[in-house]
Amino acid sequence: MIRLRTKSSRRWHAPWVLVAFVVPQPVHATLYVIVLDKQGIAIASDGSRTIYRSGELSPVSKTTEKVSQLGSKLAFMCSGLVEIETARVDIRPAEIARTVYVKRAPAGAPLLAMSELAEQFGKTIADQLNELSPEARSQILALKGQFEELEPQIFECMFAGADADGSLKIETIDVYPLDSHAAILHFAFHSQEAVGAESPRLILSGQVGALRSGFQDPQSPIAVLPAFRAWAAVFQTGRLDPARTAEALLALAIKYPPVGVKQRLGYPIHVYVVNTVQGFRKLKTVREGQAASLPD
Figure (cartoon, helix red, strand yellow):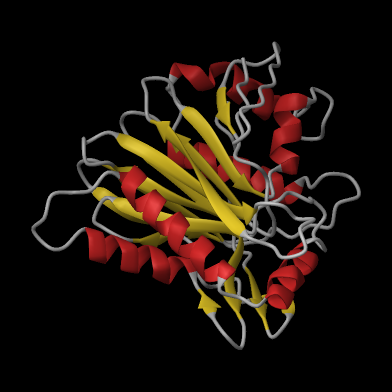
């Protein structure tokens, strides 16, 4: 059974494959594939980034990694926009996450719950967006609408790692306009938590359309691949290599974009792991043509 969860708690079930599957609301221009269980977190990130600068959305260098390390066992990442720069304010989620983490977790102090970090991070981002002029707020929303998937959030960001209680978790924070049709936009945030369990969970963030079609439509280009079918059938056994699985799924999403959708994903793929023993580690950077295939 695929379980599809969004911040509005909508659910979708498909009987043809057994896999625990969590998809925050889709955003744009990047993709993270995360495999989460009680033993570890594997993260694969593509190389695309988009920023808002001088009134325009712009792609930036694909050599800059989007997954950053906060503590020894904590990672942070954002899909969609990764930076907003205007004449009045700069909003850089990665820097805000680091500031919040350092401020609320001083050296030698007990670890704070990730939910507290997510709460403070979301509030900070929403407050900064609300400091923009009404014209700037509307312009950001209008430019964001140029992407093919018209979802409400401006930012979707995640903390991934070991929580204060020692369990492995993902905290996803969406920052979005309260009412996109209001005369003056105001922004708020919502957070959602995923906890590692015995059975692995697959979490996607970003341009998820191609991968999601593999689970939802048995006739999609990804779903018909024998390796994908074999992998999906045994995913919940936990016998697969999480890092290799995340890397291979992301490579599939790059190779098989949805029909009629302009591909915004790209190489290199960066692969990371987080666990409670060795902490946060980068495993490798994968160039085009070198990505792992799905285990079969």
